[in-house]
Image (tube, rainbow, N blue to C red; front, side, top):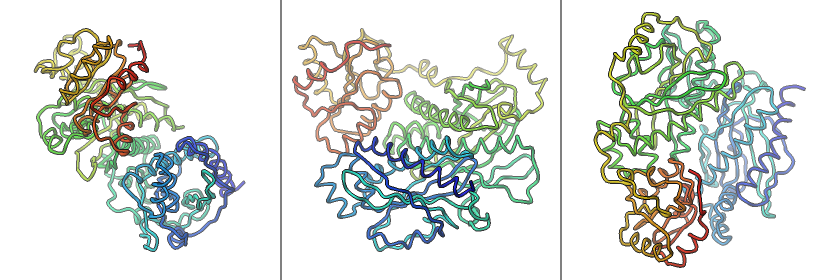
Length: 583
């Protein structure tokens, strides 16, 4: 079986997986017809007539095969699938399709569909294809009918095109089209494809101490080194490639968490001993430890400046612009922002775990988030060993958030450096005598020293059955009175109060009471989810719209109440709430 036959066979197997997962996502029957393959020039995709606008969704190929592909649908088909996903009424759906009205909400729903498709492709290729390939959705562009398609939106060189007729709810759609670069799969000579360095602007380099470099795409994926590049040990080359994958996967995962496009522009990748790692780390840092498990054990970390940690935590909590700017300029990390940043680090740990799970030539490692500390890196901050470092600049929603560093013990990637024996002996002596640099201070410890202020955790009262997080005092008092009439206990916390102390095992329901639907309220929902809330979360506010309801559900809300809440509505929710929840 030649390269093309193998690739076409694997893509044919993807059809059933995509069909099943899209059908499960939209909750409607969804069918894909017989596959049709063709090998064409990528730019020819822009001139094909389909009688409609089109949606172009770039697909990044990562792993042992690298390049850019493309997912292509008619605009009206993307609108209909997105409408089915959010359960638009048929009249509204028909109007949107006929007008080909592409909105931010539609783009969000289609991004979810593109992510499901890429996940299905990755799963089948992992099982069926001889080389490891990951498919990552990398944005989208809607082009109205009659408008030209920018050449940058189309894959360069020859592509293998898969077309599958679509059908949903008895309606025939246009074709589902996937274009994959031919050269990386060995279908054509490598010279037939445009050199990646010509196709991507703003490439960054990962420098090495010896002065050579791998060219790294701005999205974190490494392009092959130049032919005349100095030879280097395979294990160091592999280590740099794995770290580049971790940085790229981190950008995708954190961007998904924050609900926007997050970019990490690589600055450098180095193999360092501990002294070198500390020397380049910078001054006061937020350090999140990563506990390494699996086929190796150790401790890595994520390092960021204070403004970067505040910006990432604040973006997760959806702070207003002026509050986010103030947080980035503060000289300490607020406990709520520390909690938000910790949740971001949890996602980074998951991204790194996913990358290492796909490796065949290095140990399969898992990463768990450990404590988050604010400290000036010193000898006691990092164990005495070598590190593989990947560092880059983080930007989100057009704002530069600062520098992020990811360090993983070099030995776990097969790179051995001589142990600094004198330094290690000094550290052991300090550990046994208790001497040495001052201990690092965690965000929670700082909060304890300075006083956490009024809130739920400062002096927790007896456990209540219902906890209200509220910025509407009058409505909260009404709800408490109705609960008392029902024989239930309730308790009120403000939006700015810590959430952990309110999540006792006896809590049956948490109600988010908003004077009006707000980003601050949704920020509380995110904090509750991050804290491991198991009780149902109900949101109560006036003037709900379809868009706001969908947004609330996205952040973990299970039910909606319109204020002023009636006793009948509250009694119905309490009847459905579980009697007992495990701690």
